[in-house]
Length: 149
Image 1 (cartoon, rainbow, N blue to C red):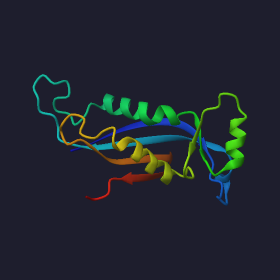
Image 2: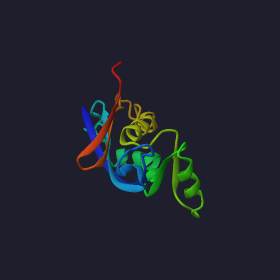
Image 3: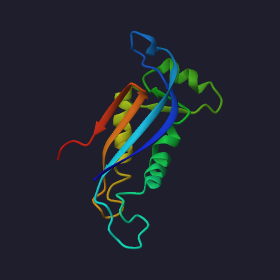
Image 4: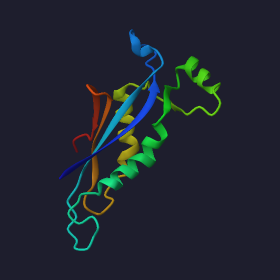
């Protein structure tokens, strides 16, 4: 069984080597979809009976381990020295320095790596993260999925 929970957040970034508009500082309303696989829980009296995982728990874990860090932050590549140095001059600015250029592809992969261990078999129902889909715009997104075993 697969279940998916969607969360949204706002963040800024830039793609330093891009040849068009994305080389400038700008922001997006990102949407993050977390897809989990597992067996539906079958325990009478259990609050999660009939569920793979309660949607509110999926949200709470993604929010506390990823979204809260990235929401209203500027996501910047550590090698983009001029921007890293500029952001450091802004008092109490929320900056997330990454070891990769913050393309939607890299961010989806990073999100998958962060969340993968969080959801692993939480209820003993073979729960695992299958895919993270990150929308940068309503018409553009990247998927980071579990490699075939």
